[in-house]
Structures are given as C-alpha cells and as structure tokens.
Length: 380
Image (cartoon, rainbow, N blue to C red; front, side, top):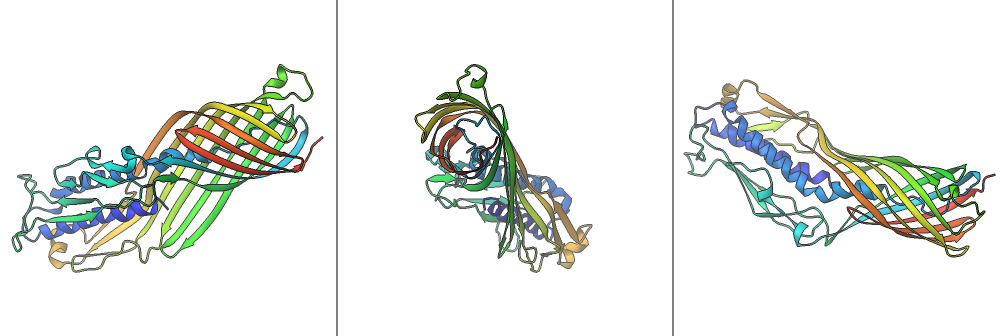
C-alpha cells in the first residue's frame, strides 16, 4: 500500500549518503562525525517529503473509516439486532493544486538540491529527482573526488504517483447493532486481516463503535412519527502495518558496506471521533431520507519502527571510524490532527429483513458509503 513505497526512497537517501561520507574519508582528514549534521539534514528532508507525499491519504482515511453508520429511525424495542456490511471511501479530486508537491515547501538545506515539482501519491504523474552533495565542513563548499573531478554526491529518483485523477481509500467492514430500548442503539465494527506479499506482509486492523439516540422522542409522543432527530456519537481507530521481508528488503553488499540484521516495520494509525445529528423523514414504508451534520476529529500517525544495521567492509574506513557497524532505529514519523465540519445526506431503502443505505458525507473531502443491512431479531 501507500506506506510501503516511502521507505524505499527514504532509506537509500540515508545509507547512500553515508557511502558518500565514507568515500570522502579517502581524500580528506575529517572524520565521520564532522558530517553528522549533513546526514541529519537529509533525514529531515526525507521526513518532510514523506509527510507531503502521503498527506492526502493521511488527512482523509480516518474520516472515511468513520462513516456509513445507520442514519434512519431507531427502533424503540430492546433487543433488536441487525448485521451490516459497510463499505466506504474518501473520493479526493486531484487538481493542479495538489497534483504535485512543491519541493520548496519541504525542508531546505545547502547540500540538498531537488526538482521544483515531484508527484503526489494519488496522481498518475511520474518524475522528480533529488541530489545530495557532501560539503566541506570548514568552507561549506561541495567536495570533489580528486580522482575523477566529480562532486561527492548521490542522486535519487523520487516516488511516482500510484493513482489517477481521483484518490480513493476504500474498505469494507462488518457491523453489529443492538437496540437497548428508549430508541437507543449501540453498534460495533471490527476488521482484522493479514495479507502475505512476496516482499513481506501487510496487517490491517480496525475497530470502533457508535451510540445512536433519538432526541425527538422527548418532544413527540406519537407512536410512529415520520420525522425524527437522532444523535450519533462514534469512535474508530485503525492500524496498518507493513513488515518487509528482512532477507531482501534494503540489502546492500559492495566494497564499502553491507546490511546485516535488517528488521523494519512501516505503520499508519488513525483515530477519529465524531458527533453528528441526523434529521430523518420517512416517505413511506419502503423509503426514508435524511440530512446530517456535525463535527469530526482525526489524529493520523505515520511512522516506522525497527532497526537497520550498516556494516562497513572497507579496511581503511574501518580504521577511521570508531565502529565497524552503525544502527538506525525509528527513521521517520509524521502526525496530522484535524477537526472539521461533517455533513451530507442519505437514502434508506427496504423494509422487513433487508435494507440498503446510501450515504454521502463531506468531511474534509467527499466520502461515499454503501451499507447492506439484515435485521436478525426484532426485539421485544
């Protein structure tokens, strides 16, 4: 998924830059520690790039995950039980403003030169490159390899877009709902699964719940009113983790260095809460429509955990640096917090055992939901 690609670019940034550092030791008297700030600059640039590349996904997936809750009238009977299969997706139009990332908005430093524009995640665009130059700590000038006259640098292609002109974040999740009486309903959702890939494994899990309560029952004593107002409070969280195959992921072996004991994991976590009012109108026994509005809050975290070990092979470099192996952990992280207005409309069709519900919500972007619901128990 989305989370897989960023690390492939980011890690070569770091370790190929170290290769440039090691090569530099052959012609200069500075030690590895003199270039620490330059390596850190490259890490900061990579981190800001991944944050920008995945921004549209991170900003919208949690909101779409917390949609598709039932919006129709609530049964007054206690013990009514229903099962639903809910699908939902953010629908993100890609325009000129977010088709590309402007690299001048990313972390800037003297030893990094990037193309002005690079593709964003959900576009079908390609291209974009960045160059890292090693600088002389005493003069801040680019270092030159005396044997070839070339700058001591590393060049990297940036990530291509993986989508088209519309970004989506689709999922399908089972849901159980139970009424407690007094027109109050609780719902639970759970989605655990794992997918094995040639290059590793993806684990996806999500869970959450909602409480719905009819407010109009306190103001209208009619047995079956056509117009009702319900309050929904819901919470969802998800965790997506990609565990690469350690034997083949980011492995190097040449005259200067090799990797050993690689163990890495990419992760994306979201938490969303929302409070929504539903205004329902029953047209007839088969059809119900509603409008809804309220507030939604999301916290989205992108990050990595694990260890990357770099072993130095060259005998001269091993004499210069203190250790023959270097370890790096928890390479990048990004957090987005957003509170937005949420609102839209919906249509509920069916009666008796089966119902279908179509829902549109705008919460930061367009969100479309479809639910198929089966009433298992009528309750008492």
